[in-house]
Length: 250
Figure 1 (cartoon, helix red, strand yellow):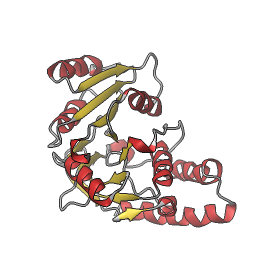
Figure 2 (tube, helix red, strand yellow):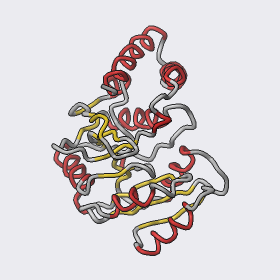
Figure 3 (cartoon, helix red, strand yellow):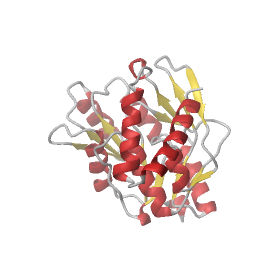
């Protein structure tokens, strides 16, 4: 039964001593208590690693891993997936956090809908904790919908491991490429809707002025080189991507 399933949560960490405690506690405080939290340290140079150790000592649900060399977020997530023992896998970065009922609500929706991939809405917040915007994704998506825009915020996505594990690629928009794979495998994905945001995404001051041209190049590369779209279809989906990217920031 889905409600008795174990969820493995993969959390990559790199120099996140100031924020990771809040992120870890939001996982351990879930109403769905059968959680395994795999915290993967990517050779942090601040106090992250000893802090992770102290939190793991206080709760046996925390599993600690440390990469032998700095490999980037894709390598850290892949290491977490490989070590996971759960029936479902979800992801949370070390500066984001969850509503206490996030996993409970999401698992119930997957069970009721018969879905193998799910996601939720989330709120974007600044470094002072002030809301910036709320992302409200559609009730369900298929692969063609995902090509138009990444509807699955990585901090909200969860999949049934019966689908098989995918790997994060070391490319720009690696989260998007991952969820494209999973939705294509599953056929569709469902949104676990709730009146309140179920996840909270920290927007740092330096990311507010992110290089939009670089992001656009990454998106084009995904369409043409990774997904193998022809020029016409790549252009068509790119126009959807650009429009949706602007809408998310309103």
